[in-house]
Image 1 (tube, protein in one colour):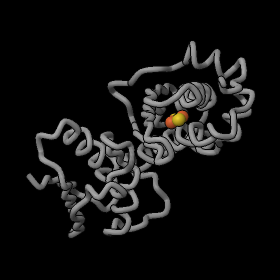
Image 2 (cartoon, rainbow, N blue to C red):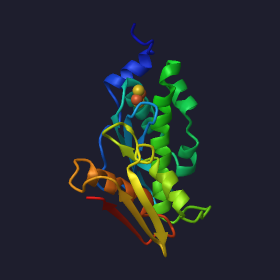
Image 3 (cartoon, rainbow, N blue to C red):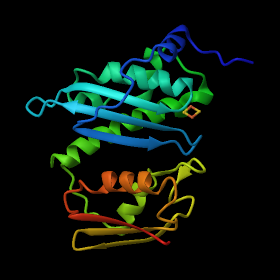
Image 4 (tube, protein in one colour):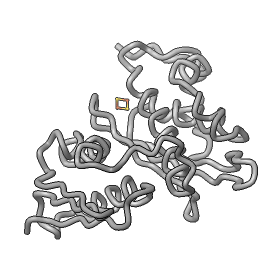
Length: 211
Ligand code: FES
């Protein structure tokens, strides 16, 4: 039985707006969904004076709902300030799409999480984070739950790829239980560096592999 997608969802799925990547992005984030193993990447260009999102693009490795929500959130976020864009919720995205089937809610949550993570990435890169929570081993573990293991479509903590985490004098060391020549090794390394390297109290991120 086909899922009851609205006309608007189908239209955004067929002609998604703002698809692609921004090579010289001011911020970016990749988020994965533990519910289905799909991923979304969000790229931002931000006016440093006004903090208005001047350009936004997304890449979806998810289903039709995820592509449609990614498309609609880029439309909703473009031209908004970071503070305004932070408030975009999946309810709002889903409403703008004329509703999503309940089993597909997590797909729009994933797209909104991607947007929020990209905004957070911008704030961390530009020292705009107000609550300066220290980067502890626990904090690192929490962040690593947002790094996907594409082999199984779950995060690297849940799939027990994280062998060791060490935080000392602003240096974060993460050891992954994976050979360094694994096909996803460099993508995971890059994602970890991006997710932690811009923290206010982090000077260096070292990702090591067991083999
Ligand atoms: Fe994975 Fe929709 S089922 S994003």
